Image (tube, rainbow, N blue to C red; front, side):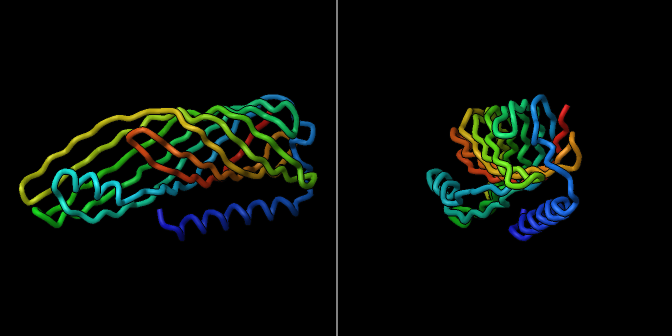
Length: 217
């Protein structure tokens, strides 16, 4: 996913929030207490260290140059409980989309090594909020992310073709920032930025920018 796409998503989210801020709707969470559900879509930006892949191929005796497609579409589902407008707990499911890595092998053979990974998992954490107007809530959040990753690799070299795959999993710290704005007393629109640093063999860092809706029971 290109940087231009991420910028456009941010512009769309800002436009929606600005429009709602002019609608005169009081913030739905002003007297919030109880359960809520939410869903959001967005884009993934993955920080891929190309040197790690070139080093791994070098250990196998191959000289290469690696580039990466930094991400794709993201999906976020949330179930939470608000104690008040300042504090909530949230559990959720996140799917990151695909990250594709392409290594061009130049010596002693030629060809390509293409890798892709799919990551999804579950989050559990707390959200701390601060109303800035009657309609807008800013918040920070932190928690744990329990994830699974599936790697697939295909090598097409002058000496032959081969493929492999493996699964990886783990649990890591996640954090983020966001804003919510009321549509009515039960619903608000929400924009989120989330950071995920995955350890293990995956060793990837993700930013997810998403926009979605919350419904309060």
